[in-house]
Image (cartoon, rainbow, N blue to C red):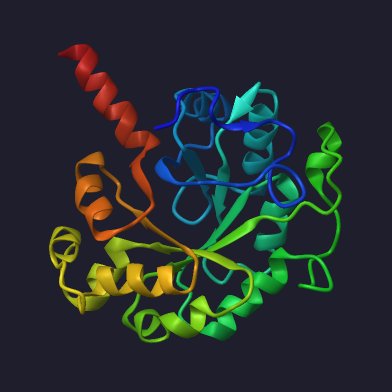
Length: 253
């Protein structure tokens, strides 16, 4: 993980601000308490994610967390995972100040194109201008996020090259739980399958050929060495709930 002070200077981030470089160990925030999010950020992960799909975040709590993060001297890149079939949620996450918007269950190039269209301003996309982060001083009126799409199904694997060819998709995030269910296996077996024709090495190879970023949700840090060996560049190594539970157990001995 980066040392505190190696993250983004807090001038807005994103395209038009500083360059986003969300690589390495990230933390995944399920709890929508802004002070908890601030503590996670001050622990200096390489990036963090606010989860609206399976976490407690909604538009209001995402905005509240982003406001607290905006008050920190420096912070890591912040991703927001929007719900499945996100519609306007992509633009709202970007309006709140997300550096990265993560979209789950993307299976086709058409779906990826709709996501990119929602994330970017014309002429590249169709996002309407209305940044909420302007309320606390962000002057980057053309600020745009990175887009990561999640590969979680057999159909997504089949369409991976076409998804990666979509302009605006900057990264692929593998969701190992749903992908394991779809393939009739489990996350540990998925990570252990390291032949070039196995699912995870195929994802990494295709993503690198496309010049984009291979990323993976891990859930626990013990999975990081296997994911790194396969070639993934960014990993969600723990949720905030898992990290709190481990910390409490450590305090109690």
